[in-house]
Length: 501
Ligand SMILES: [Zn+2]
Image (cartoon, rainbow, N blue to C red; front, side, top):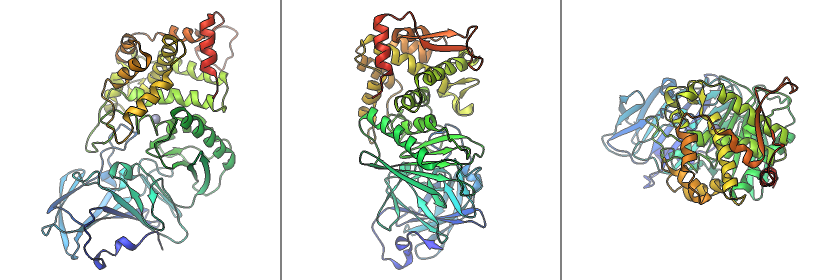
């Protein structure tokens, strides 16, 4: 066994400390496929509640992490066993009559599919911990600093986006950051790169430690995307960033954004083809982790945190994932237009779009699988709303402003620790930045079930048309292309739109 950090855990030997930090220690047991978690407090209430989250930021769907937790016990700093009762399915109440420090111990099953995604995965030579699944919180001490250490088998490595004192524990500035910082332990391949002065790491994990792809080439592509996105915003909201790339798919193929990292779960193939997936998750470092509806940070982990703006958080992020992959030079104009057409295909094929708005699809997603309502995806409709708003912004400002300016405005106004935006915040920003009243268009796009005004695309020289005879078999029902009848102004706006930085 190898100890990543030990000092703070010799609790009984240390004099009482006035520090109110919360200290977590994770011990993976590969044979048992579990992790043990110890959570130590220097001070605690006489009746101290511990809770496990009902959901994981980034996936707007209730989880049942409590089902994977067993063997919970608690001990006072004097070594006395403390009584525990349940407050509800996700809460435990420790009776701590002296009110001094205490340690809670429990076990979390490590059977999350694939290499781990929403939960905990423990294998013979590696483990993955998604914080929300494993680390409990104290409802009355959410903003307290916490530390995280691990006791590991010999040779196991550690990757985390968190700060670390030299040879000390990982440090999180509150519970939101702690659980939004996944922990990769054991065997993995690591590639480092920098964008400007900011260090990045790409952590590649495979079940058998073999990699079908060229990791250097894939890492170069991540570097291109990262640079393009930081340039768009002008600065980054993190000190370092980690791409965790799990080359195995469990019950979910795709990515999940975290505050200063992302986990991508994809097959272990020769070409990973993750450019736009990585671009999407990385864009979330701004749009949703900083630019966020008020309810999405600080979070209430005890229940659904509803907002009508997930179409902006997810769909507009997806629009940018394609646009920025193109701007990074990793894909060409034809690819970009095809991606636009695919979204139109999907939205027009939806029946639910006639009865639910993008706002409603966001609000009601919790009961409907976390991606929208019925066959209306807020990713898809939000993508197209982003495209049309971008086109309109460029038109009404004669090319002086675009959706990029709205993103920068939102970032400057709502970055942490500032509170997130009110439910009307996106509309207010659009009106503010454009200097025009975009409310009627916004209401049509986000708050009505009216047909999407695709003709707005013509204003920036793009044409949407149904597939016709002579078009390649491979394309769907729609084609997006340069408008052959574009006005001079529209042509100029298109050149500006397609210009690479
Ligand atoms: Zn997303």
